[in-house]
Image 1 (tube, one colour):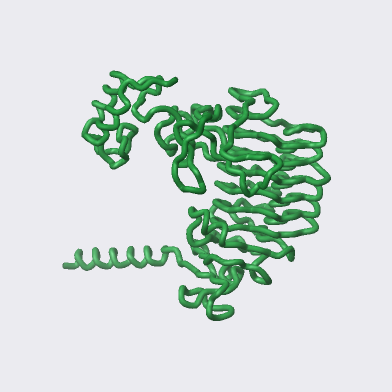
Image 2 (cartoon, helix red, strand yellow; image 1 turned 45 degrees about the vertical axis):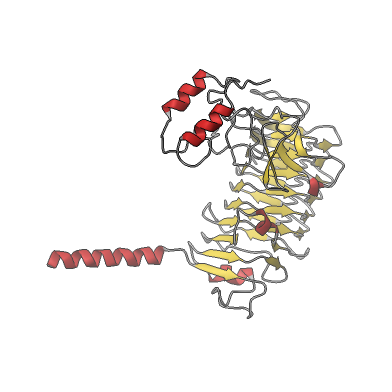
Length: 430
């Protein structure tokens, strides 16, 4: 009996610990009924900074769709907290573009300077119309390394460096961000990096401008090392280094596209000292490095002198390309040479089948929107559907698992998959 009581007490204590550790959601709605509000779902804060100030480590600040401007909605300061500041659905592009932090040129979107680490997450927001006469028009980050994911950073201005963002002594991560149409008066149209080592993964850096300096996309200064993986840098402008400029810094680029960037000296990539190491990438004008190519990437929609809002950096494919307008798969007459051309050591498992069991180059490589290539029944990717593929199919018969032989994607290899396999029997690549 005594042991039973002890067990009950232990279980009750564990439940209390679990409850205390559960993330608390603090709500923000610009159209909330009260000002300032209390942060509950029924009585949300109207201003984002009020919600941040009420948070503790582990909390989530959830921002409803709307335009957030005026005091309390710009120069947002996480104050060193390990919190998540996000929209209602960071994975829904429609939610992201409608959850807007707009300083209206009165300041920056975020001011991060208190040692925040990767557990400080900013996700699923649009940051636009930020302005500073100094550094970091949209975001300023000093001695901090937050995570910035699924954000749109657009139309911001810095009078000195870093139109979209300035970071110093920081090693933050950008994941699946769109950084477009930002301007710096001097260096770093999109990103200015001093010291530290920011990492950008699956990001678009396009149509940014350094009006009087270097690095239309990214400027790296004095050990401002940067790592880019599966990014697309396009139509950025500077005096030198339309896409990337390195001064005493080391830049590493992998599985990326560097195309149609412009500079007064004609350079897409420029180095004063330091290095720019590129591999498994598509670089206009070529660049030395492992398995780089120089070929038109065949974007779904791209006119260098056209409206940037109409650009679509998915890769054309005769076997299937994600269409953002229809939200379905479309086919093209061309198949981009960037498909299945990435680093063979990169993870391709999130890419839709069929593919070449190798990650694509560019922003959508390694994601569920990667352009497809090949025949779904060509399991050994040799360009033929034959007895070798049938053997692989037979070995997976009745398997209840996620695998490429599950052609209907229903969680099991069965007769429905066999019908699809039969329809593709003896296919061969033209």
